Image (cartoon, rainbow, N blue to C red):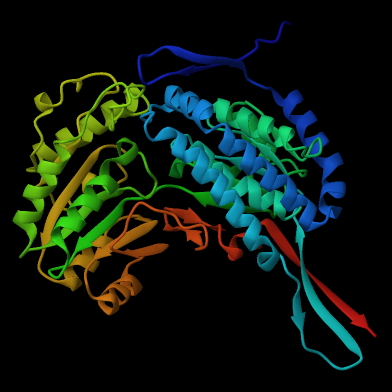
Length: 464
């Protein structure tokens, strides 16, 4: 019986054209990739850290040199405006360099005091092969978060990128190959969910780093249920902002509009709900709507465009339905779609939307929307703001807009979130631990602590 070969078509959200067609690997190809990684992993683990770092730095340099080329390819795959897309490549290169700088500290032996006749220390040793499954919305940055630290820690990597951005996975493999990385240390593969889940269950995989939906995270956990391996899961958010009465109003509006609508709202830590002290509420909303109206929605390959399409027509329909449900429940939509020339009731081009008269009975204030929509509510004090910020199954980041540093820290301590910002949002500093709580996932990437989940401690107890 002839085996049917599955094909992957990358459909551009720009115009529905086919960007690329690839054959999906079946289990035989995945099995071969796992075997290559298994053969390579001992030699790679024995490679000195300084040498592993050299390969990663060479990768970063080559990736940055391809920013314009890969940025254009990225725009075509997922719709980010070309005026912004190359920046992801340069940022990914810089993040890789930061992880190289942190590696010596993050992977250093831990010395333990003991009796004079003994030497005691804990060494962080690699797990083996790490399966990295990134999302499409920041395909280079998300992949760098796991791929580079995993390699630095001495693991081999199999990179299965999103079906929306498979060319980014290929670019990783090509660029590392140009950097001279040994064969088998990193492989990119295109495959389906079933084959990916079978790989998770395979004993040759030592760790899984997944970024995606909550449903996808549960699938990964189920696939590994019969194994004692770790998994890092970043599963999205419903990130809130709180504008206190003492906030710099103009600064807060400018940054929160950008935090809400950059990348068409398709950012894991993008702002999806805003709570404003009642004394500033009306002025804040008026300014927010005025600034939102200045966006240029259109073809992302036009350098004038700063708001592109969302990734798929089906996701655009989901967002439209969420807005309609909120309006039916009493919310008021403040943006007239007709004021955005390229916005449509169908397809991928959505006008940004600002909702008021919202409450937490509406899913748009509690569940992830992942689009250019934000709800704004008035609150009376810090306590009410904290209560509302915590009223969501997600907890990735939260931001407080205030002139009072101590108040920001006090509020941050109460909010159930992985990162708390003061006067900043929608940003990731690689020197800090990137973590989520609740349905935003588990595990830690970046910072010196990010190496811990990609290694296991091995104790050495030596009699002198």
